[in-house]
Length: 221
Image 1 (cartoon, rainbow, N blue to C red):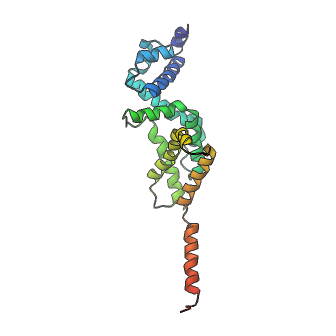
Image 2: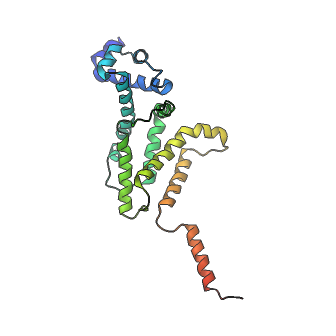
Image 3: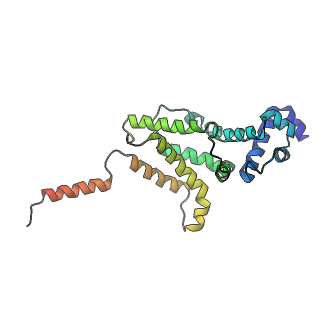
C-alpha cells in the first residue's frame, strides 16, 4: 500500500527516498549504503529510485543539495540578501538553529570527512558567497576591518558554529559546567566583534594612556 501510494505521487516518493538516503548515508557512509537498503528504508522500489535519481552517485548529490538548500528554505528572507552589512550574531544564530535542528545533516558532514570526500556540495558556495558579500558590504561601510579577507572570515564564522555543534557532547564529558548554545554564541560573537572593530581595543587604549601619562610626568631623576 505504501509503495503504491508513493509511486503515484512522485514528490512523496522522492522525499521518502531522500529522507532514507540521508539517514543511511549519514550512518553508514556512501560506500556501505546500497540502493536496495534505501529502497527498504524508504518503501520505494529500486527501479523507481533509479527512475527519479538516475544512480546512487546522483542520489548522493541530491541529498547533499537538499541539506544545503534547506538552509535557504528555513531562512528565505536572509538566504539571498547580499545588500546589507553582515550581522555576526544573526548570521551565526541562523546557522546554529538550522544545523542544530538537523542532526542527520551534521552526521552526514562528519561522515563525508571520514570518507575522505572533499567534493563541493551542490549549492554550498552560495551560502559562503552570501556571507562573504555581506562582509564586503560591511567593509565598504567601515564597519569591518578592510584588511581581513572576506572569504576567509566567512569560513571562520561557519567553522565556529560547526565545530561547536559537532563537538559539544564531547566537550560536555571533558569540561565541567559547559555553557549552553546561547552562552557559546554570545562569547563567539563578542570574540569576532572585538576582533572586527576598527577602534583600538581597551588594552591598546589603556597602554596609550599610560604612555601619555609617562610622557607628561616630570623627570624625577
